[in-house]
View 1 (cartoon, rainbow, N blue to C red):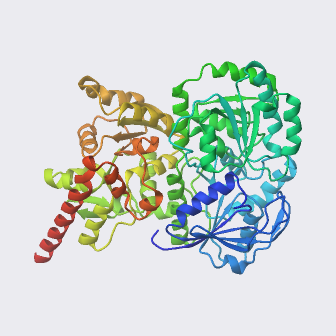
View 2 (cartoon, rainbow, N blue to C red; view 1 turned 120 degrees about the horizontal axis):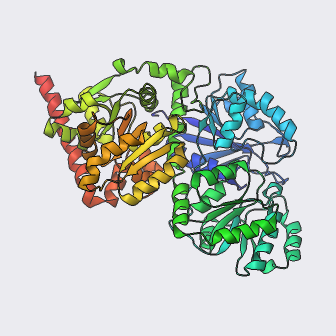
View 3 (cartoon, helix red, strand yellow; view 1 turned 90 degrees about the vertical axis):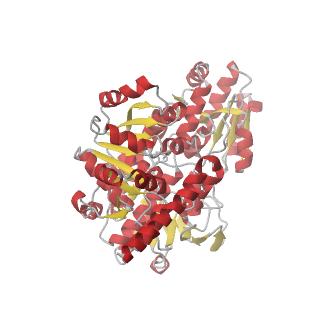
Length: 638
């Protein structure tokens, strides 16, 4: 999105309040503020406190605007005038509360563009359950339907909004890893607010039963206590007679938390309800194994990660016995798998998807809602946009003999989803400077253009397009960013085969991609096969019956392999994805978001791997620019 926007995020609580919702908004704001002017509109008091906070305050690059309100956490009336909302190009509401309802009400009188992220909706406790369900069907349904897009942070949220007829995009809560180590201590840790629905009392009873059988275990409790509940819980700790093994640390800064978790091996929660469980996944990012109460969000995390233990903390003796029995089976592989799962919950994917939806809304300026349906297909105005990019009318640009499609990211994804749906055999290549130069040297540009849908990748091809055609491509469609968006857009359960990368990397990719995108991995092979294995690979792939084949051999090996075997492969959609497996599993770190946003990730990779990449990111780009200039001059002379 080239235009610098004024974006307002509406969230009921923000700094100095601390929690999963506040952390999510802060991370998204930090990333967006690199490109846009970002504001946070929030309430002027922390729930449970009478102290009023400053009306306007700067936080990094963003500005916090605090507004007065009447009411309590469950139901409040915010005093937010339409004139303030008019100052912003886009509004983004976090959670389904009265701030979201106010946006819907304002939209009746003004041309308002807004988005919504569910964050567990408002079913965090069973209080007023019937009233909440009625409110969901009558008020929240109307508020969500008027938004340009709804982002669901979990499958549970997705199912709830679908039950009231709302299409949503599944964007699981991403996390920032707690560190680059794997914790394998013996202690247990709880991280989160001290709140009634978190059932800290049950954790204390559970810890007491544990220490009866293993006196060496300590339960660490970390979190703010905004409602002053710890005083009563202290009596319960004293009554348990194991108070020295239950330690309350209060709120800890990130570096203090990192130090503490090194002595722990398990992250626990007895919460009766969670929207997602952000702190659990953050703990898993350093190898802590989750021990969780049986609720919908935790069951989802357990199923997707294949890690941890689900138990009933309402039965502390049985839960303690089950934990000790299960603990004996834990291995370092379990901790590594937990970390791989957590680190695959990428902020990069969330940020890019949200940004695409913002851009689409501003481009179309049509009535809402342009959503992906829960099954991954498109609905609303997005479908009409992609109709312009039908296969026979798809615009392309000749980049030194290679026809490269000129598409937005949305158009590219929808084109590939449509090809997959029609079972039209399609090969996809991402043309960077290296691939274009290779095709020129071997004079295979015509073959590449005929057999592949070729998408542009990187600043070098953009510069060549600027020289040859007077403009850059509509979007940078590199495989690292486009592939996860495609996997999230295809129907759930789509069968995917992985080929390439190191054995450890491809096996980790096979574990994390289903968790992140809801696809089914029907087989995988690494990129270092013996001669006999390589010869039988096509038969193995066909026998697995994949819908999508991802080939990660690096260019031009992956393109050459697909060109050679395309006729024998019985796969509707095959993509050359380069280092995608390495990035998806965290084996190779991505550049910081601000470097990605200014199109300088190549510099980050060059500094990390200068010996391997210097030629690709210096000579190859320079050679492409020189060739493009020569071609342009030759055309003018002719």
